[in-house]
Image (cartoon, rainbow over all chains, first blue to last red; front, side, top):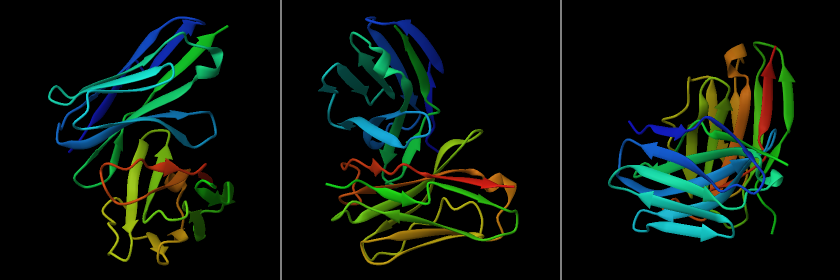
Length: 111
Length: 115
């Protein structure tokens, strides 16, 4: 059974700092990995999707990497802003087409 | 274009009552998924539909839960004889196809509270 772990569970940083969120998964037989953002009381917004054959994806200040063989992914956020404050969720999809989620990292960026 | 929409946004019900939650996927998306997000469990898969194929119901927690989808449009998730442990946010997502390569787009969710 696939298990996804995210570290840290919570992170508080001052505005402008670069930061890294970590995700690990136990079964490397995945189709892709997605990073989502969730604001309080809201649904999930997809940030980046990395196919299993890819090593990284970039969107603006966000960069996600994937090391499928070791079961790890990182989400790098450059020059963090207070508007980046949210819960960040990592999820993998395997041959059963179901997303398996980590429990998320609660990020607070202080002005 | 319009995203995934869900209704109602909030539902409060009494234990033992039945509830019906609705999801409108993005137009043209053939795959539709239901997930549940609760405090203790995080986000968990419930069921998915792909076109006219039989749905994968392997994530439904009990036989009180059922879901239907008409063609490639609206889906309803029904919970019969609700229990307090059913309280959670129910999220719907859709994707272009049922393929591991397609992004799943999520709706805002329905917050269910069972008293």
